[in-house]
Length: 209
Length: 209
Image (cartoon, rainbow over all chains, first blue to last red; front, side):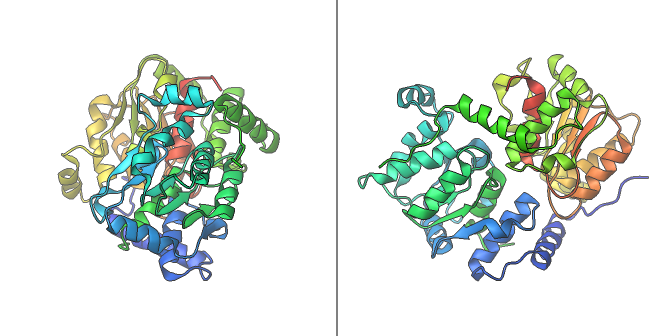
């Protein structure tokens, strides 16, 4: 006997989002934030994540306006850049990950930092007005904050700062949240990662569920 | 003042894995399973995940032997295939995701199933002895189980079955665990996803931490 299961992708999304809205505590979010939070919970498979999600005032509007103006999306890892659903993007926006650039290993050695952090140096020509999506490396988020300490560094329009893990993830997100150099979104604590980050990008890119 | 943080990638890994081993309950795992579980917890940023991880007897040995013999890794999503660390692979193994193949949308329409499920039909010529890594779509795992109901279908060497979410994820993983058509690994319930799946592949590919 073959296994029977829901095979209609649209129905799967509808049922998933209905379950999340029935179970999660979303009252604290503005409507545009709620749509983003629901997708982040969906990607994590984890009701309760909403308690750790923080949006700075105007974050969703700023990030969405940037994408609608054609801004690129700068990602710290290929798992982030590959996850962005191209057909949701309003302006066929560039989705950029510089981690595999041939210059990165040398740059990392010179800087005495990780390749994930060094790769951000290659963002500079694209950084002004961009949407930043950091879903993997705490060192990338810390390095971005240090770059932005320089008033001459170009400013992104918004930062999704959701690195994951046990060393530096919590600390780098707390630092972003305290500094708020531009509108930003974080998941507090250890949780985060590429799937949650991609979900935020995809939700901002299009209101369609 | 610049932010100060750990910038040595090897030290970050060491500290992360030490934290996980101090906090997680890993006594139930065999040594080779423990290494895989630690990496899965690391990718999720979630101590406690170990309670939901299940390895069938001989899973790690079967998957590792397949990779050491040069088997391909078949992935349901680009976020999985892009996450596999190529330099950890023992035989420069092929890492394959067929989801973007031009034939898939038509096949999905014909089958009345998702593109994620339809993409698996293109795995058939590579499936014998392969390592399967399903980290996104419950429909892909269900369709694989249905393919394997046919005794004429080629058998993979091992299945990492970790789709994530609210519709079909738990059910498809329970079905895999009950059927165990080949050695397998699952995360019970809603949790799972590309990062956890990639972590399992990377741990099996090399014992190096």
